[in-house]
Amino acid sequence: MVPKKEQPGIIIDPAKIKRSKPVVEEERKADSTSVSAGPVEKAMDLAFNPTREAIKGVTVIDRMQGRLLPLLDIQSQEWEYVIEVATYRQDAKNYAVTYGQETPVPINLYEEYMYSLALWQKSVEGINLGKITDIALAEMETKAEDEDLKDGAGDPYARD
Picture 1 (cartoon, helix red, strand yellow):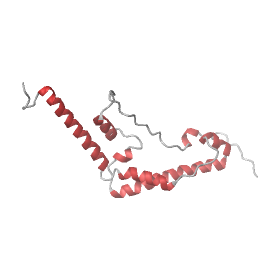
Picture 2: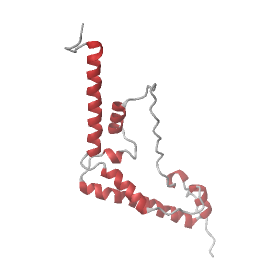
Picture 3: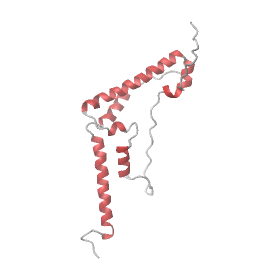
Picture 4: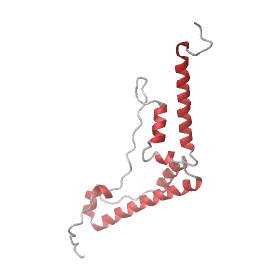
């Protein structure tokens, strides 16, 4: 076995090559006394400031893109896995420090493809974005009507 030569000047940054899924924020249960954003604000925030995962559900794409974009996601994950395996084969100790595990964990491609496909299919022809916008508009209209009719103001049938 040939001993490995140290290459001066080559430094591997563990943060740049570590494969990890984005952190998914847990949704808090709505309290009756909560002063957080209502449905309109949440819908508008999702539509105009989506997270990395949510952007797949609110981007307007056509049917062909809805079939091809999940494949790009899988290809990207596979390249990350290939780099991970190459790092492991080069130096197992460095791999353990960088990735925090002893050996690379294979990706379940079927499961990842179905997840990605489900996210992208919500975007075909803007279906998800259209529904989010419809919900926000309906909520705004209801809120405006409630404010107009509060205490009988603007209600032609209200008693004086």
